[in-house]
Image 1 (cartoon, one colour):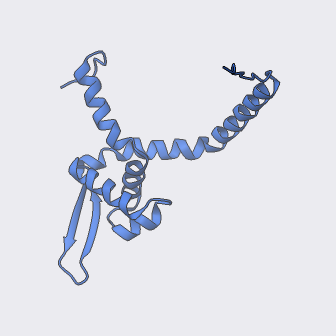
Image 2 (cartoon, one colour; image 1 turned 30 degrees about the vertical axis):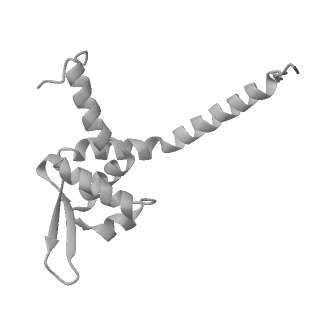
Length: 139
């Protein structure tokens, strides 16, 4: 199936399906960390990804595994050792994800500054508008 014709419903559905998985915050972080660090254990990933809960990391890894982007290897040791790595298909995301990481790092300060300017402008507009008071009629 070619996704070049974005006017077709099936193409939009396919794009939406894929982006809902690889476009979410935690999936991008997991793929990025595995891309930059190679094979990692669960707790290594958890330490590297600031703010992710154990439950959310578990769900994200399961979903990425289900989609064929991450593989999970369980070693029969006591305690069991579990490692995660990108599959061949998952490795095809390295370029786009790393480009997104690099772009984010390069432009983060400018984005924060733009947000501050926007927020200040919104507060100025809100402060200069007359207050609207709602009156109710007593019956």
